[in-house]
Length: 294
Picture (spheres, helix red, strand yellow):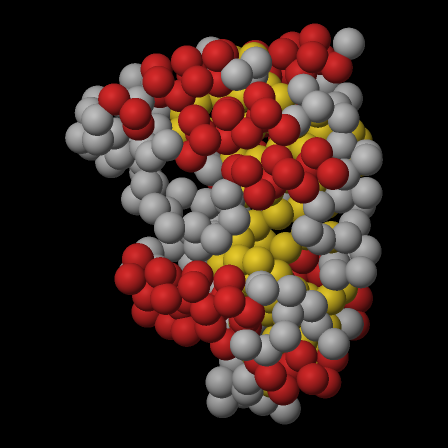
């Protein structure tokens, strides 16, 4: 099995005609994901030309796209100023999952969008995330399909690039994945570590979990406490930013140390205290998860 997306995923791409949207839609279709619609205001009635002669109908609005195609998942490739509005529109259309790839979305805009989506019972992943992929089933976002393979490891990460590195290491060691999830590095995100850990714990095919955190905030500490109290499956982890100076943002808007709670040292300590084996560098993750599974 997998979490959040699978063979039944029917995807609509918001911003399908833009540069990033069109590029990644092609990649997504080539991977085998069922892309059933695109949405670009003013371009309804046109079609998107996919690989192998496939075409995708384009609609002006999400409600039209969902009504016509039965889409259950949306991915957002629209500029930052309009991304929160796209989340609102998607959440109101009837899809169950909204994946917001866009970086630089105003935090106040997303605060409103998250509340609206939660009230609608819609899961939001992101913003500022690479999306997710369930190897052999579906890919939603920008995670490269060529580095994943099916297997028993669940992976959840705040960092996109670190996700790619960890997946590459796992695949190279013969450790395939059930689902790889990039939750995003913004201060306000829709799906957090605990949401993913809970889903991996419930997934019978996931036998172990790799959790990749970074400096800033206390999400990793809260996730570590959750692992200790609720996870029967082994979890190993890595914290990025171990040499980051206090008070300086490191890449992500949420990756800033303010007080001792946000430091790599505190997060690694929380991991160890709650039974999570901690890698000093990404290359060590493979050995840790192999040991945990044996």
